[in-house]
Image (cartoon, rainbow, N blue to C red; front, side, top):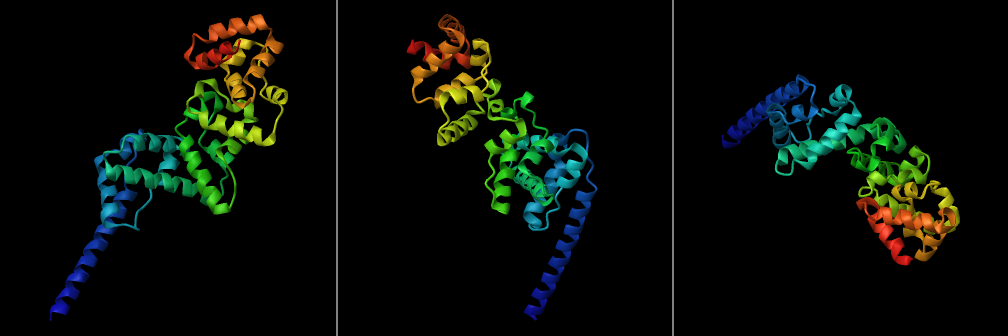
Length: 270
């Protein structure tokens, strides 16, 4: 008798859960999207749906990523998800939903046969807009990791950006100094493994004919990092631009935060 009663309760619970799941799926499918994606994802309705998904329907989540990318575009969705994730540390439900959406977006790219350079295009990452400050950069790195795992490949952020932007010198964006430190380190390691002569590297980096522009471009700084002999950097600059021009340019560059460190280092050598 007890077993029969327990069986009946179980069937009722299953029926209730099935109805809830049906309603949950219906609510997802009928969700209205406004013009501001962040507002949509932070809405009480979406939060309730996300909470139900996590607690009552694990494994039955209905991904919104297809609808979101169709309405807002992959680039807007990616940037919005990154922004929301940074500010969702005190909201576990929101954080879990955002992470799931990020995973779903990357999974869609893999499913569609995208490559890392292709994802750069999808995300509309422009070097003119400082790629290392782009909110999409983290999404690209997520894709590269999963792409390598799925395809037993050896793609990297450095290789991808070099392919897309047409050369290593193009990656040394002075306005991206903080964000590009990792890229600079990868470039220096690559050049050292290839044992590139300093004069050849200087040529490859396409130093400007103006010493002030060369300093502000960040190329002198990365060349300084690469060089085994720091005094040789100053000598090569003097040979190219003239000792007086270099000294005057370094004195000016020392006044600006972005070039103060390299200018000071080179002045101390003189």
